[in-house]
Length: 89
Image (cartoon, rainbow, N blue to C red; front, side, top):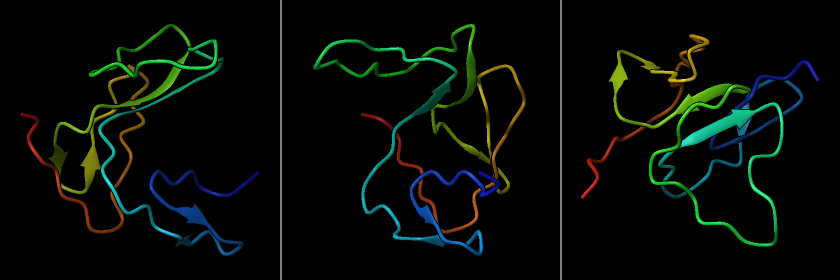
């Protein structure tokens, strides 16, 4: 569809964020195909870019309102609402 992709929120028919996620997101990786198989999986602590990765956000830091896209495609999404980065233990 022509709606924007929002990580941590739903998008309404006016392309505005709704239903915000209340929790922590450590990393996001979007790929062209399924990466995991089976009924269960153990998420990677720090996902790596694969050949068909379109977006990879390890949530390490902000550059102004931007997050760094580690996929190599240079998407660098913009944070449009309150975000807090917390150092990993």
